Length: 208
Ligand code: DX5
Ligand code: ZN
Image 1 (cartoon, rainbow, N blue to C red):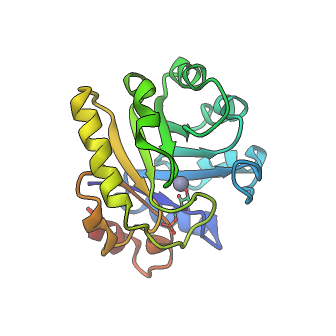
Image 2: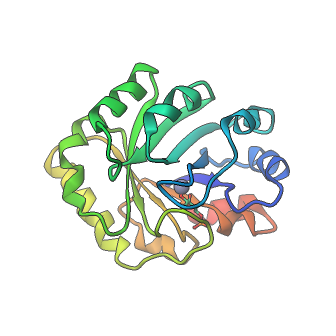
C-alpha cells in the first residue's frame, strides 16, 4: 500500500515536513482550499511554493477549489506527481484534466462521500487516480465514514469493468484501524494519524 502524508493539521509544517522527508512515505499530500468549494482556506501559493525548502518528496496535490484552472498552472510548477480536483466542480472537467496532462502531470479526480460513484464514469479514461473522500472535505481529524468501504469496492469494480489502470486513493480518517476498510485501495492519505504521532515512520509502516 502506498502512503501519502497530509500536513494540514500540522502546527509546525516546516518541522513536520523535514521529519517526513526522513521517512519512506511515498508522497506529501498538499491540501489546497479556496474558502469557496469548502469553507476553510489554506495559505496562498506565494507561501505554499516554499514547500520545496522542506521536502524532496513528490507532491500529491488535492485541490478543494471551485475553479481548478486557476490553480493547476501554479501547482504544476512544484515537484508534483498528481494534481487532483473534485468531480463536483461546475467546470469543464475534461478541459481541466487535459490542462494537467499538458504539464505532463498525472491526473486525479476526487469524489465527496455523498456523490454518486457513477458520476466518475465519463472521465475514467482520462484519470490516473481516483481520490475517494472518506470524510466531508474541508478539515483534518474527522472520523472515517463507514460507507466508504463499499464505495471503494464500487470504484474497484468500475475500474475493472472498464479496464482502466487508474489507482484508488482514500482520504480522511485513515489510521491503523480504518485501513482494514480500504483493502481495495492502492494508496492511503493520512494526516492527523501520522502528524499527531511521536514516530512518523512507525505510523507510516503501520498503514502499508
Ligand atoms: C480533508 C483533507 C484530508 C485531511 C486528512 O478535507 O482532504 O487530506 O487532511 O486528514 P485526516 O487524516 O486527519 O483525516
Ligand atoms: Zn486531502
